[in-house]
Image 1 (tube, rainbow, N blue to C red):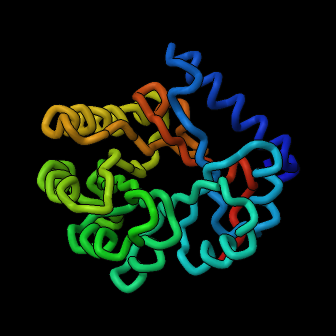
Image 2: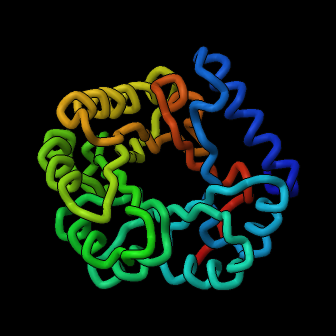
Length: 234
């Protein structure tokens, strides 16, 4: 993959997503490709933008803010923050992103709500779920999702859109599907419990498990290596 240049790798990523959707017998517009550009320069994001990519995900806040400043002329970029978010960084996140995928505490959600600028639309929120129950992973446990979701859905300036997860690695497609299926069931439960909330998003699936995620209903798939090549060590 590292010897393939943009835009070829972007075309291949789009084809891979389309093929996965076809195999899952889902509409081709039912999942969106999120290009994860962490550790990659703004010039690569600009190149992807020039070839039609609009949704970009970042894991590191300061790095993202620097890229946003450099790319300020591209006003139709949709920025997603998908990394861990500390309390002292919520203001910058609330001011500069359209989506936050990594909310796992009410304190973080409350601060995002309070700090979202009034002139901006509500901030789209996904709750990060530790779907594989790994001690080293961020995210709330599955049995905590309903309680936190109800509290987040009641906050002004936020729109609860769905769930995000990074499951433990698995060795086969069928094994990969198991945690994604569990996250999909959680989303269905949330939709039933909060019928007035626009809950429609499953942020799941990365370069190694996109196909499994799409089979289980992913609506946002987060591809980094498959588009931009191997990550640079920070």
